[in-house]
Length: 164
Image 1: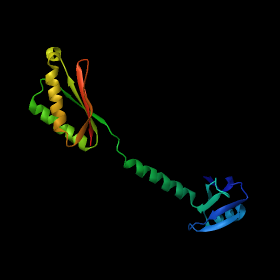
Image 2: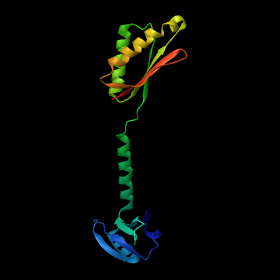
Image 3: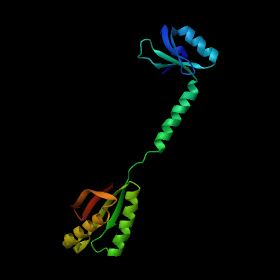
Image 4: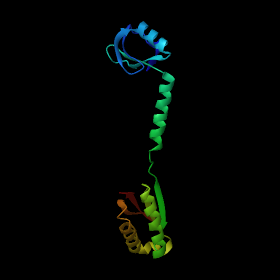
């Protein structure tokens, strides 16, 4: 967008302050009309033949654009990955509490990473851990879907649940 003094073309297609098309006029006349209205002459489409200029309050226009951009940013949701940690020896009641937390995270459209951590001899009971992970995923089927199935990495097994 170019304002008043920066427009160097001889004739422009003019749109007045009310949004009505005036037609093709000389740039000097367009500038004169803008001055009489107490507004700015702004080139809105430089690619047209001839370029399109509009009579408007440029400061007000920029302010409204800024507000529109700000408004669109406030309605965006940035998905986060929430982490829950379990152990093979974690009791059923404690797992139910973790499931309730995960349900809340999934309801807020966040992803949930469930980590099963192994200590010492717990590594001998990977089958128990897989059962607990499967139970966890099954309990959350109604609000989330399994994005990454349980995967073992070192002394840690993890899976990722995404909101439906």
